[in-house]
Amino acid sequence: DTEVTQTPKHLVMGMTNKKSLKCEQHMGHRAMYWYKQKAKKPPELMFVYSYEKLSINESVPSRFSPECPNSSLLNLHLHALQPEDSALYLCASSQTGRTTQYFGPGTRLLVL
Amino acid sequence: GEDVEQSLFLSVREGDSSVINCTYTDSSSTYLYWYKQEPGAGLQLLTYIFSNMDMKQDQRLTVLLNKKDKHLSLRIADTQTGDSAIYFCAESTVDSSYKLIFGSGTRLLVRP
Image (cartoon, rainbow over all chains, first blue to last red; front, side, top):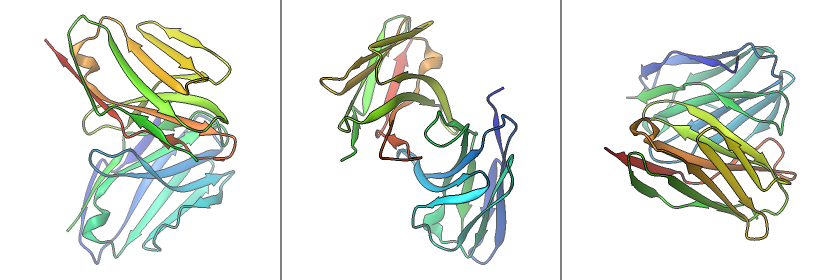
């Protein structure tokens, strides 16, 4: 089973809202990732968690707040987003860092 | 430095072979990946090759790696309309830690 699940599939939010994106994997992977993908572009890395600890933050604005409650779950908390934050948000996981990453289906976010 | 380049577009007729090309610059690449992304979906891992290999075959997919020229290709035999998608080449290197370095993606259009 190489499945990474993400909820919700679609999300529309206003600039004053607070929402969360969720990601789950049951492959026993210990590294989990958040990516942002704009239309017609490759994914851009945002955050990496390794063994439930934040190991990489790619200078992401503080209106994005990641959380890793346990080894299977990864959340991305959103607050006071801007319209330019509208994108496809992808979660991925791998056994450890530097190994093959498996991606979820993504959450398509629209900020109005 | 790290840079991965791909041609933007390829159009083939159904039943023909498709060859998608990728060049990379970092000679410390460890793994090279091919991901497929259909419209509105996440990234699906198609195949990967370790940098000490020259070729890998998996059903209709053949990956060729030329380390001297830093050139990677993905050949899809008997291309079907369901193969229409964006194909991303990506590398992971010794120095990039957890990062996947993506190419810009090649849009494959399969004509009936």
